[in-house]
Every structure is written in C-alpha cells, then in structure tokens.
Image (cartoon, one colour):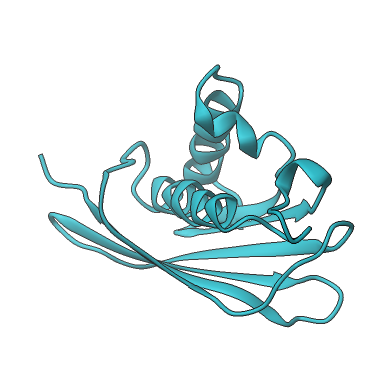
Length: 141
C-alpha cells in the first residue's frame, strides 16, 4: 500500500513530531502503514497520555484525529496538508494505561477545495471502538 504519497506523509509526520511544538506529544505513535489516502498507526497508552482518571486523554485523542488524518490526506494528495475547518470526535470508550490503540484514517473525498476524512481509534486486543472522528480540511488555494 506504500507509495510516494505514503513516503511524503511519513516524512512530514516525522518532521512534525521532532519539532519543539505541541505535536511532539505524538512522539510515541508507531506508524504501521499508509498510502492512497489511508494511514494506520498504533499507540501504547502510557502515563503521559492519561487524564485524571488514568485513561487516554481526550485532548490527545483529538490530536491523533487531527494530525494522523492529515497524514492520510497527504498520502492521497501528495504534499497537500490543508487547513482544518471542522474537527468532530465522538468519545465512546476509555483506553487504559498499557492498552494499545490502533488509529485508522481514511480520506473519504478530496475535492477541489475541501477534503473529508474519517478516523477510527480502536483497542488492538479487542477491536472495541474508543473514538470516531471526522475531519474537514480546506485544500484550495
């Protein structure tokens, strides 16, 4: 499934997490596969990822949806990250410290000016849906 789009998306993702900015919170994300508008990653939930209840923090969940769906878009339209116009997340189940979550991102449509992306975050061991996100990006000039 990998191609030039995936390589570009992977390089951009590596640059983002190596920055001194907020996105460095994604430094423990493991990229599994991608290309042709899709991107898959995994994350083992660690204490630094937790909220006050000891489960995956909602803010990190939103960041996963935002940043990784952008990587899916870049793998579809090489080098076009776009700008977020809408980000929506449904939080459905907690993920505890030690659990691994799988982040599956898909480019539903990338038109002339807008791109529509979806993200499912599931528990690797059980397949239970932790969160579902939708992301709309402006990609026009």
